[in-house]
Length: 627
Image (tube, rainbow, N blue to C red):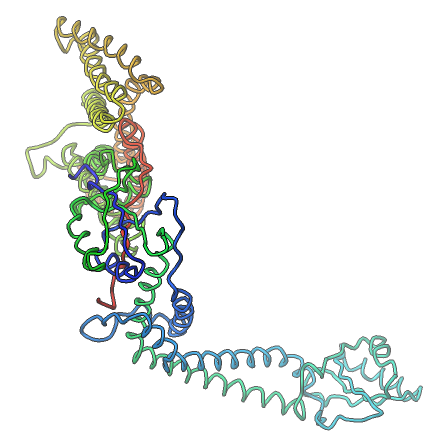
């Protein structure tokens, strides 16, 4: 079954409403049902009655876990996972948890400290401008007078203002800073006096002493602010230590409760996919055919045999479940990243696993580049997530790098140098002397892959689209017959009898393909162009080899260069490696892009349509808990 999705069966379960909770828990536990909303003309069910309470508990717990800085991701404490508890107890424990209450209290205190620090940071510059005024601002209170503080551009402006106040006997008095800070003054004046006018006249800028509250003298206020900030920092450090202590003591239990909450929320919300009557619940979904026994047993136990299971045949496309070997998982990831295979078509992952490394290795064909790319890809797997695209592409890259090493040995390429003869009698093929053979092998590989793709297409289409399937079959005859006819007619590789027979088969198959394929008849031209596209394997491989040889010719000594040549080579070793590394990067990029293109366009289009739906069973992965 490596090329096929697991056979699926759609089922419908009818049970009493009173058994719904037990049934949902049982289905979640076995984890083999991919739920679907039924098309039956019945009322939709709603989320479980405790869904709102669970959601509120989830918000409360997530807030605490966020404050504990990653405690959610730590493994639960204890030698064994924690036992799953019932919904009512779960909601109650989270609602009454003293560690959670303490976390929220500490978080509130942290926010208050942060707000106070921000207020001080905002007021401190303004108060610093008034630090030279030796006046107790707490005693500035009068029914007749108002008080305003100003900063002057220089002391001449202050002197000019003082002179005008004395000369004109204005109802105001200036208290000037003592020179320890910026030139500033405190202006005491009768209420109603235009203090702003005289301040603007002398270029003074007002400092708001109502918003930026000053306790006593400005210098004393600054010292008090510094002490308050230091106390706030000390308390914030204490809070962090206490949060770390709470995380160490209770993080495991909170992580387990969070997992239980996620599971219970999933189970509570799943009811929205059900249908219902006054007393019954209808559940539909897909299960692997081999799990029918286990599914039936789980339902029977949960419902105490008060249920009915129906096998549904409604023509819906089954979800896709590919049980691929571990070696195929990176290819599986890449295929699914592009498009999930349909459950009724052959899986392209295995042929892709075979063909891509071959094409990539042939285009690189260098032991040095293969080794470098292997370790480069290995490094990427160590710094990326196993669930990500880069990791899985790097795993494919590693396998392809091995292929590049093999082809490098076969073609006697070591960073563009030919070194096989120094330790083995096998010297391999020469890229320049064997170009016609390499071109022929590339195109023949393309023809073989196209034929395999057409054969897969025949299998995929045979059940439901017989005419199209026969068109794929005759396309194989067309490709094989056409290849033999061309090989005999142009290159005399086969006798005249075989050439004539192959030509007749090719022409007859062409007529049959056009007649049978309908809307897909236009694809017949691709049966010629797609195999020829594989000639790019030779072209890109040759380009890589030529560039490597140019680098070697420019930077490596010959045997007759003597000691001086060796010294020059040592001197240019770093540029030598850099240029080869850059050529490797270009070669790898071209090898990967062209190898993927030949598979996805020339090969997959013969049989693979994609657009399937991934099988997603109702269930949860447990890390911190167990049933």
